[in-house]
Amino acid sequence: MYQPTIGLEIHAELKTKTKMFCGCLNDPDEKHPNINICPICLGHPGTLPTINQEAVEAVLKLGLALNSIISKISKFDRKSYFYPDLPKGYQISQYEEPLVRGGKLKGIRIRRIHLEEDTGRLLHADDGQFSLVDFNRAGVPLMELVTEPDIKNSEEAVEFAKEFQQICRYLKISDADMEKGEMRVEVNISLREIADQRRLDTQINADNIRENQRNHLRESAFWGTKVEIKNLNSFKVVEESIDYEIKRQSEILEKGEMVKQETRGWDDNKKKTVSQRSKEEAQDYRYFPEPDLPPLNIPAIFNLKKMKQELPELPEAKRRRFNKNYGFDKKSVEILVEDKMLADYFEEATSELKAFNPQTNYQLLLNYFTSDLRGLMKEKNISLESLKIKPEHFAHLVYLAEKGNLSSRLIKDLLAKMAETGEDPETLIKEQKIGLINDDDQLLAVIKRIIQENKKAVEDYKKGKENALQFLIGQAMEKTRGQGKPDKLKTLFKKELS
Ligand SMILES: [Zn+2]
Image (cartoon, rainbow, N blue to C red; front, side, top):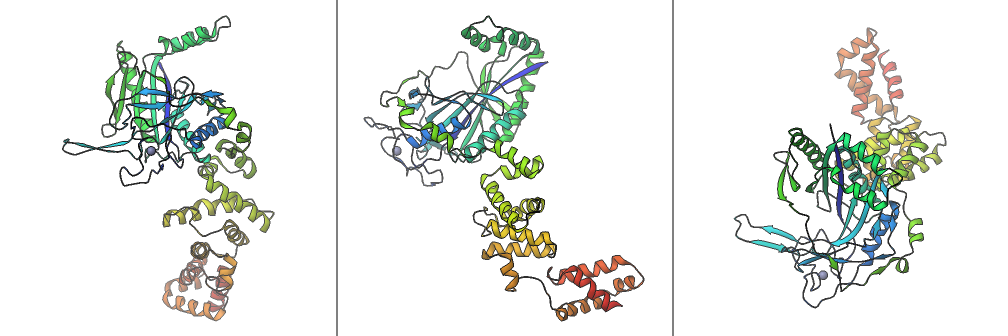
């Protein structure tokens, strides 16, 4: 039996107004190449970078959210990097003094979070004759989070990455959309025998051991050989590549062979990891302090205490509160918490509904929210923001539904009309833009036609089959688009058929 040891490195592009070290717009939607560029992000000689405080603040917010240690002094370094997508010949990053160290998420310890700059994009011609480069993305603030190797399997890894994404969105520091490349995951994975794990744990947890010895043990050969899987761009691929790599490395070790230390990539067609380059020795980036940027004195620039107080409620706290306050099951809570905007809307609607009906239990609100309202968003392919339905109007509709005299068909129609007009459901009903047909004559006309058209059902009913009556009422509901009250239709049918 082999125990996987997994660590993650997650990159996320920050959604600041401008780039990391210059005043160029940070606009991921810009389609025209080389628009948002200047001598600084093009690396012209003699230009000087300046630190984007909004980007620093974003990383600090995440650090505070994860209960990490915020560095008093943080520094930037140059990392050797020679590739045409970053014209300076180096990347400004952070090495010895990252902004953030420590902290925890989903039980996984965070090693560090630091800031660096993103690269441009290369486009290679199909015939391989030339490549084009777009520097719009060069110099965009990029945050990198590194975990300790606390992760045991693909499930934990995906759970961690998803939670990271949600927190970035809650903090509004990054959209972290993996499809758009705004969030990229790298996996470090090694396997070792479980017997070794126990021995190592005993050694590490011994009392009479110095801290540097402890660290050395942690890093020692007991971990097994580390393989890096780079550029994973969906949660599914993170899961698949880890599962594949556990299987691949186990098979090598079973045979008594050594796992090669290397960087691998994911081939999504073949559903396997493939070797990219081997690392005979540790890569030497030749980091050295960035001479053009002064060290950041964080407490002198930021009021961390105030920033901490101003953090929004985070997903985990929200889950617990939603579960406690409303008693919803895990799955429903997750649907609500997934998107902060949905959660806020839902909560506004609950307090409005409470005003209409203090006895409400919110279950009906949840049902209409998760099925009908979200269905409408999907159908129109728009966000909740763009729907014109105000939370209080939505609550009002649910209240009317709770009272039980609106058919589900009518509720659907009302909701669609509300989305169009932004009006209150009661107003819509009153103004007869949509609503119940109270006029008996109008209903009788419909009923007579249905009796004509459904002779068989009428016969069945007369023979005593109650189901037949239900069928006829259903037909009438259909014809009136749900605007006839079922109980009223029943009375009228009975009278007409007696
Ligand atoms: Zn620039």
